[in-house]
Length: 346
Picture 1 (cartoon, helix red, strand yellow):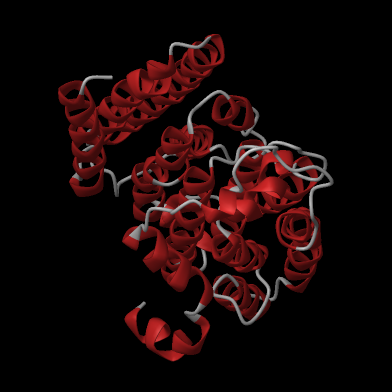
Picture 2: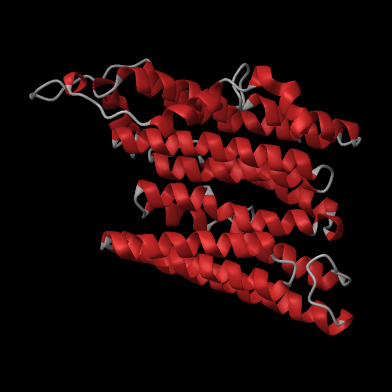
């Protein structure tokens, strides 16, 4: 793709998200989401491959349906109240339709089926954008209207996302699909606590963005898209593979990694709200996700492939340094001691 076209698409992507983040009017919020979608489709189909075209088509149809539902919900609410203000959702049917539209855009269960197939057909950079940047605009709208959301329904969808996110990734040989189910599980944690503490949701979202960015940047550096390729990557960059194991532990929420922080605080908040059963189910369901993170960690760091290439050893080749990736890895693994400072910030 031409650098000029790429810069235009990335600028449109940024502009769409910023419009949605700063809007107080439903039409402007919808317009920002549409700009996001239309800028994302060419980025998805730039590989000129049937899988990429299929992924772009699925993404466009899903997002178009969600946008239409969102606009219909806003118009219904405006017909009742005479206002298009985001904070003024007065009718139950409008709130339910709006919540459904945003859940489809975020790929929260049971509206998650499009995400694994779409991510599997994309290159790693587009996967990174889809898994991180594209979550910001819908979450901004959810946080603004969290007072009008049905907390029981949000809790049920969050628990379902945690269970499906762990269950779906168990037998995945493809790392991109594994990251898609990881995204679904992490979104479940954010959705559960959203109606009780939006600050914890933002903290969890921030940690999710950091850990997911670290993982995809390492996958790009090592050109690993499957577990089999990852098992050979220790020859390319042994220290980076060791750090990948730590980031996977952080994604699983094991202490003393940074990923333990949001899960710990969310469980504490849920128990304070007298939802002990929900906290127990969420904590036990996380074991499913932890299993495939541990399996991948074991494969990439504690096993040696039975055969090696009959060419120059890959680990002797000089690797390019990436300061952004190094920063993300450090933040993914070493933020737990800063918990008091982070709590004061949020």
